[in-house]
Each structure stands twice: as structure tokens, then as C-alpha cells.
Image (tube, rainbow, N blue to C red):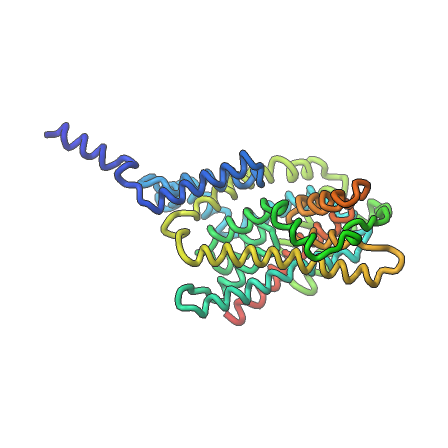
Length: 385
């Protein structure tokens, strides 16, 4: 009898008995993310930990994603995502890895970085419209968090969502990082649709040399402007500019090296697993998730389109220095993938056309732009929400 009860207890504790269909689906989703990361090499540094975290979070009885039950990825989420710490640490590393020289050399590209954030506010309105339907319940806080996906900046999306709508963190983070990974697939058709062959062949002049003093003063100046005009954006902008100043100052190479390598790698692991922990079946498999994925794609596509269209307009008024409209697509924050895609599409029309450094201007401007957009949402939404 004791043996029978022991065997029954063992059987009831197995995954075969306790798996739900939802957990099975989400584990398959996690395996799908691992496939995209390993086989297709779509943002593997993030999709590998996110996909594996999704699998761990859906193991029955293990409670790995529950920090109150000592679930280790639940503890990671509670310690670094829920309070917004991990995205800020990521921004420090990104700042240390970023060269703002192309933006300083061609300040006009800052406008392209701003234009590419237009999709954020379109998606926000779209989410509010969906919230009026009887099937989906999105409020203003949810809509703002969904809209930020259009900036194609995962850490910013996580930071804003953790502040405004933490219950949507899983699908929003997955959408943001998925669309970042799919930049080489999503952007080229949009770029070709809104440009002519002649425009894609435009060769831009070589950028001027940017002095070390300019590179040192840039992060300090940006931070001062942010403090004066939009203090709510200073956590993200400040972290970004601190990392960049550590790199450009030349006097704290050890700190810069740590930010660029050890710190950002460690935090990326923790952040990815934490995001995966929010892909539990009972939280993720909802109609709202599909709405988030669709709106995120629309926001990202519109951001790409508006960047290209503004670059076309700027080229019309540029008498002496032509602008290739393709670089407007790099205004989204997917650094440096968006700039590489611009360069690739440009070289398809003209093999001798090198747009990479020109595209890096709006690309890094997009990082600043998404942080500023996040600050605007964090300042305005609580007032009206």
C-alpha cells in the first residue's frame, strides 16, 4: 500500500500529468524563439535567454518564475525588471558602445531619428481604439506601453512598460525584441516602396572629422538639455550618456571596457531570462497579446516609413549636399542593424554606395529619440490616466 501511494504520488508530480495545453503552447513558442536565434541568427543574444526563460516559466510545479516561491528567474524579474534597473544598465552599456560621431558630423539626421518615433503615437491611438471594442481591454497606460514598441528599442519598451503597465511586459518585450530581430525582413520592402531607384542610388559626401572634444561635450550637452526640458527622460538618457562619456573621455578605459563587455553581457542574460519569465501561459495566451503583436508591427512599419519620407523631403531642400532617403529608415533604434540594412539596400542599387556611417547618424539619434518619447509618455500618461 505504501509503495502504491508512493508511485501514485510520483506519477502525480510528473510533468506528463500536470502539463496544461497552454504551457505546452508556450514551451513551443520558446522553442520557436530559440530556432530563430540559433538557426536564423535573429538577435541571438536576447532571443536565446528569452526563449529559454519562456520554457522554464512554463514548467509545471517548478514555480521557477514565482519569486515568492524562490523561483530564480522570478527573483531576477522582481530585482531588476520590475523596478526598471536592468534597462538602465543596458543603456549604460549601449552608450559605451555607441559612436555619436556621425550624428555630430551631420546634426540634421537628429530630425530623422525623431521622425521614426512617429509610429509610437500611431500605435498608441490604435491601442486606445482597440480598447473601445468589447473583446480587448486596453487603457491609456496599456496603449502607451504598446506604442513604445514602435521605437524598436527593447530596453526602452521594458522600462516604460514596467512603469505603466507591468502586466503586459511579456508580450510587449517579445514584440519589441522580435521586431528588432526582424529588421532585415520588415524594413527593405518599406524602403523600396517609398523610394525610387534614382533616390536609392544617391551617393552622400564623406562626413567631416569630429574632434575628441566634440565627442566629450556631446553627452554632457544632451544631458543638460534633457534635464531642462524633459526630466522624466533623464533616467534613460542619463544612463546612455554616462556610458558614452566613459567611452569618449579616454580616462576611464577600465570602466568603459566593463560597460561594453562584462556588465552588458551579464545584464542581458538576466534581462532575457526575466522577460521570458513573463511568458507564462495564463498571462500570455490572451486576445490582447495578438493585438499587441499587430500594433507593434504597425508602429515599427510606420516609424520606418516616416523616417524615409522625411529624408526624401529633406533631400528636396538640400541643394548642395544630397541625402539618400534610405538613411531615414535607420531612425528606429535598432542599433546598428538598421544602419546595416540601409547600407545593404543602397549597395544593391549601387555597389559603390557606402551609406553605413551616414545611416549611423539617424540610427543613434533614434536611440535618443526613443528615450525622449519614453520620457514624454511617462510625464503625460499618468496625468491623463
